[in-house]
Length: 126
Picture 1 (cartoon, rainbow, N blue to C red):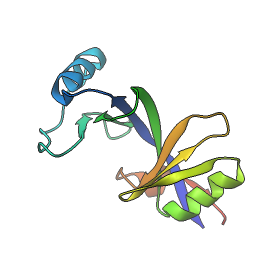
Picture 2: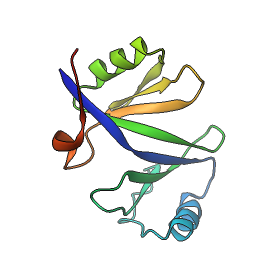
Picture 3: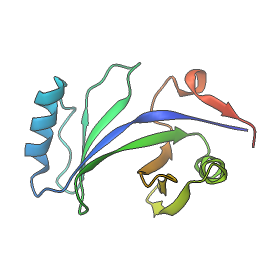
């Protein structure tokens, strides 16, 4: 048995200036930016309430888009579950997995991000 749920959305920006992209999305959404990231990081988090989805701005090499993350307490079990629904593995990246839905959208299965995960996630029988 494992758990999973929608974690949030990642705004992928094909840009050389992550700070400008982050300022735009912060102003557009009316959300503050969390503490500055180190220069080598490709992500900037936007501050959302504890009961809202996680939002990040990410510097990427591929064309700009928005993708969603599914958080899970067992990434491999969740990837297998999603495969049975028709998704396919694209590949692992650091501690998460990139997947593709049968309809072509890319998304990620990531480790647990939010404190209320255990009480609010879906439970799946493996």
